[in-house]
Amino acid sequence: MTRELQDLATEIALKAGELILRRRTEGVTVAATKSSAEDVVTLADHESEALIRSLLLDARPDDGFFGEESEASSSTSGLTWIVDPIDGTVNYLYGIPNYAVSVAVVEGEPDPHTWKALAATVTNPAAGETFSAALGEGATLNGRTIRANSGVSASLALLGTGFAYNADRRIWQAGIVQHLIGEVRDIRRMGSAELDLCSVACGRLDGYYERGLNPWDHAAGALIAQEAGARVGGLHGAAASADFTLAADPALFDVLHDLLLDAGAEASILG
Ligand code: IPD
Image 1 (spheres, protein in one colour):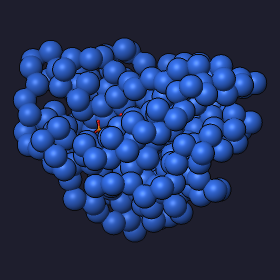
Image 2: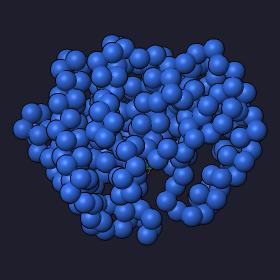
Image 3: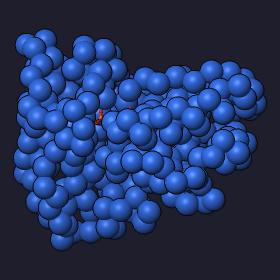
């Protein structure tokens, strides 16, 4: 069952990936702004989400839908699809080839504190890379098994992180980076949380953390990183959520967790 869901997630993500890549070459139009002037939504976001939604409705009419750009619909099957039609929207806007379509299916309420992710696919059409996983079945990149790095000390760890659209929150997040950057190898800000989690899964990053993620920013990448051997969670044993998302090999996870607490990661966020 999870394999079938994974195949469907991949089929649909690839179709949406083709669409957004085509639209990118035709020229990107900003359709609206959301939480702030920097938080944009493009016409391609809308088109991609509409395509994914209609394909899911045809294939699995009883499942719920929870996407970034349209109203949620509830599930009668117990399964819900968590969708980001373009993760890395600002990269997409500028033509930086690090953006993705993200499709995950979860069991239970569409709440990252309680859901059980069953299958997921994240595809970066500009790079021709597709990451995928099914619960208990491992993770792949373009069909080949991937594993997260292990045995890396914090001082040699390359981390990824991200910043919010809200300026006060970004300033708060920069404060955490300032504390952490002298403790690790270096820190990258690549602009797509889903691809950051996939980068942990395939060893391009040793760890990743961010505060303030939406469910669609991490649903798929978290399962892929977990199936590649990483631990993905929040602080103090919580599940990954908007409160905090941290991913790394289990031993490094524990060290980074404590470094992040020392850096003030659980203090209240401004804005
Ligand atoms: C954003 C990206 C970014 C992360 C932000 C997200 P969007 O998602 O994943 O890397 O730092 O927190 O909101 O807006 O491009 O879908």
